[in-house]
Length: 345
Ligand SMILES: *[C@@H]1O[C@H](CO)[C@@H](O)[C@H](O)[C@H]1NC(C)=O
Ligand SMILES: *[C@@H]1O[C@H](CO)[C@@H](O)[C@H](O)[C@H]1NC(C)=O
Image (cartoon, rainbow, N blue to C red; front, side):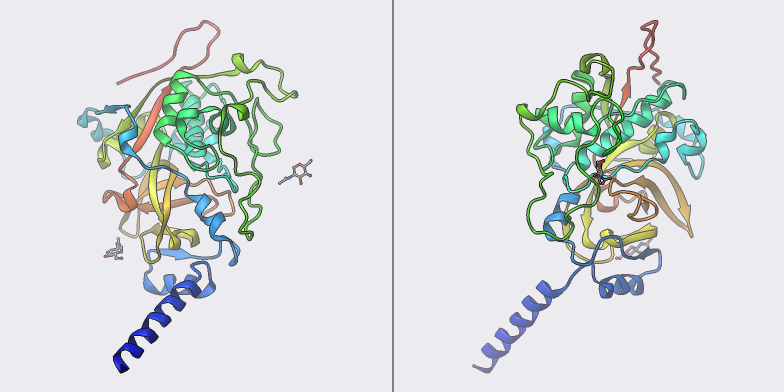
């Protein structure tokens, strides 16, 4: 009897503390900072941010069986050229999109936003820094039927495949009126409501508009730019580095735990909390900080999150699965002479 009561009490306490523990509380932030010193936690989201909003932050369907991209294998002797640290903003300084941080808002579109961010960088890099083309996440979210469910969840592999088959138009950020199809979801709204934000849209044929904003004077069809090919990169630190160094940023997927929501700076290493799902990000470079090897990564949660939108994460040990499913591709550079300017290994 007594042990039954004790048992009930213990279960009650465990259940209660589980529900009460807010991963965004000041207490949680303090606790993370006391547990380790390699990264620093701070406030990125309001303490009362809803679970719904948080679950939208990680909107990637991680299903490696649903992709049929080619696996690329770079000649390993290329590693002799690789520096200890690499930031593509130094190598391709005219490609301004490398500094950009996009904001997915309350749309579970990381799979699309991180993809077009890398495609945009690559378009500039492959044009030898001569052309910029800001790929539209909106076009991908609303028109790619094989990608998944638009603002509800999607497959990052499918995004790259779609780019090679049907192409993507241009589009600026929310409210920018730039390009053919600017982003439709405002940044950081409805943090605290448990309702599904109005901007959460499941993709279906009806939401795919085959025309541009009236302010943009180009036909939808004529604005499309295509990928020449898309491929996956082996789960291997050197293979990923070669790809980043010679071709530019890639898209990767990581498992996100609640502590990551509070990342401010340093080299992220999982400390505490439960998984909220899989999240697509743009990996752009690498380095070493206080003896910890890291990947340099751009997030899609706006400039106010983390280190001005960027973060570092432990490199070389497939931390949170970040080295598992790296995807990239080569753009076809538009030129008046219709000559493709694509270099290959
Ligand atoms: C977007 O533009 C509209 C109209 O100009 C304005 O009312 C709104 O505040 C803007 N939203 C953001 C998030 O900038
Ligand atoms: C990361 O955290 C784990 C335990 O959570 C620890 O064993 C490991 O040493 C940490 N890595 C670094 C580089 O500090």
